[in-house]
Length: 298
Ligand code: BEZ
Ligand code: FE
Image (cartoon, rainbow, N blue to C red; front, side):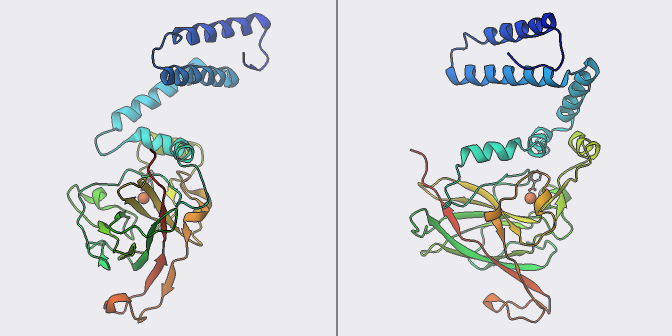
């Protein structure tokens, strides 16, 4: 049934027999998809246990790890999603659900810091809400896969400040570095955000300990989150990343896709800013991100 390293024929039969019995226990699952998923899970789980010859101590360690993940999880801290993220399971599920077609904008992980109920800003408005960071002018269009502009598409945007923290990490109820806006009649949008900076995923819990033990960094490549929604089109959750960022190849949650890496053009202090904004002698950056949405599944 599976190739186990160096076990006797008698031992192999004992292990095979258990797999057969567990698979059979799901045989009468009424819902076909549930049956398929559970039986595949059993096959792969047992193959894994047998391949690594899991010890009882290691099994207990895994149970303790999952228990700790449960204990630290609250309404605002989801350690299991974090675990899925650092194992690449979140990104793989997204890859499977959003087949690459070379036209539609690619999706990536939502992360734990999206919240509904942000302020609406006008086109050209400011999302920073007082969050610290270098101003960044962001502009682009929203179109469908035929190239038709999408008027009135809603864009939610959110990002960390220059110290690598989201508003909600300071205190609940603070809103900064996030907002939503709508495209104009030609599908265009623009806003002032902040030039993205790198920051670590929450790493003070069991997932952080796992990263440390496996010599992995908790840092995410610098990014700016988007969620685009429009009637009749599939909601897209994505980010844009900063071209040249040293972390593009080692993002802790495997969220980077080449098509989402954008040139953030640095503008020296004193460069006139869009909308005649007075930036008080600070440098700023600008980036373009054109979003293509696919039709909603029938
Ligand atoms: C983030 O983008 O903020 C994020 C994504 C996945 C896990 C943790 C943080
Ligand atoms: Fe983020």
